[in-house]
Image (tube, rainbow, N blue to C red; front, side, top):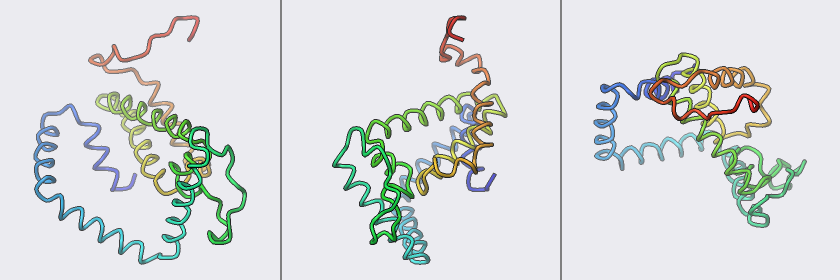
Length: 194
């Protein structure tokens, strides 16, 4: 697992510990004090990063703007399909590619967007709870964090062949029992439904 995600995973999997809660409080206070400077540094880094690959960044920005503009034509259900070939101005890249969330808006509309957002939110909350006691859930949470961050730059559905082992790990993590403190959150099924 890359080092960037190690800090997120460590914080998320130890939220119930007082030391992490105290550290989070101190960090929030410091972020409030130094927030404008940190935001400025983040903008400078983004501008530097974009300048290193300016043509790619410009193309991605154009595709994102086109997806948002064309989404307004069919906001609820979307267009249904992604065009196999985009306009010449995008080097024939299809509109709705290169960004999971804007691609969802373009192809599936607000319905598809909300469906994935709710599924990811529920998965995050469930794995966050289970990760306090389970190593498998900690790994599943790390995979989910990677997918969430990855969704901001690429379409998740087109590269599933790369991360399918992570999806298997998510399935294993979801089979883990809830900790005793949160057992009442677990959905109950009748034997006939199971």
